[in-house]
Length: 232
Image 1: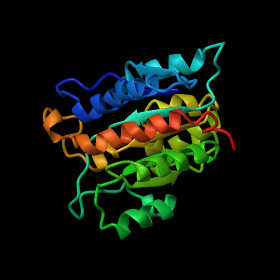
Image 2: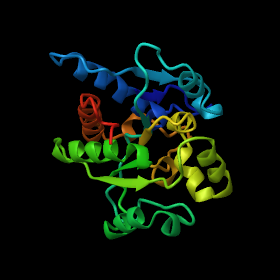
Image 3: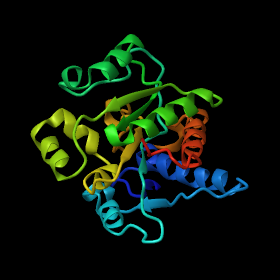
């Protein structure tokens, strides 16, 4: 399943959060439809993410009987990039909780010029495949992989409540699938940790980077065409 939430907050046009994610879902549909053989992919947009993942929770509870969900890709605020040093911020405690990913961001001068791929052990292979696809695309797009150490299921959700730094990793529709023990990953531009327009009236289409947004779509379509992306 590849999906994005359709809503935004009151007073914001929501270009990055989350029209960018919806645009990628639509482009993935076009790209996959052009393939000689249609891959087993379900595309979905979710409602009411901003008020508690309502749509995603309902969808995760009702998987299609004829096509069980092997894994889920969530597109969350994927259109905003910033190349200047210092434009990528980090949540408090990130260095302790996510050492390898934070080191990569620091080595790049805290530039917000990458897509963050949040995954768990169950979705690590899919994350690696997406990173490889983004690196081969034109324009190439760097990806930073961040592994959430929590287990899938309710225990992982409970740990996130106790450890705020981990809680940041479940702030979109993929969390509803994690909680149902379905492998999932989130693709994101890190929202408020990069984009000063987050949840504001200034979150308008002119702030987005359409070249790199197209690469997000291309890489996601290639992942969708990989039948065993969530195996192993």
